[in-house]
Length: 230
Image (tube, rainbow, N blue to C red):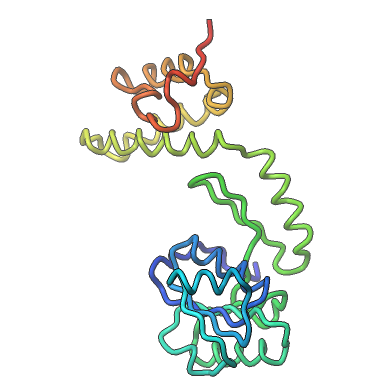
């Protein structure tokens, strides 16, 4: 593989976006969603970026880029329409061994941004190693149809079950066969159809009493929204 697949925790980390146009704005919005501390450097900026700066969500410097802008940064994104400037950002970042992505220029990056499918805590990244972003986009749309909201609810349920088992001092190695029985059932289909009785029956068979979807997922799967099978 050309790229090493990795998910990076950037919560609270200082990230720099050079470029304040539409592309840069999209990059900023994604970084903020992931909890980054974002600085934008650009001669001009979209209204969205100006509003984010006014709301103190980002730091916005309306001026030309300087190599010193990379000081104390963890991750860099170049998103200007000036390829010479983008290349300079890449060179400066490489000298400092910083993570750097240049929009639409894989050769100038030491990491590339995949197409993302997100359903709650389920995140799937799709990459064509920079060879066909259009195909990655198609795959993303296909997967979004295949993996719907039920998968997010399922992960919340599995997380709640895991936390409760850990609180009950179950040995982690004992969890695997229990989780496998749940995962390999029809639980996704039951969640999609809001069949709470089927889910509760499965949880009782695998885990015993005290595990019901209504109790484990009160915000997501209340009984007054579900329908059981007769």
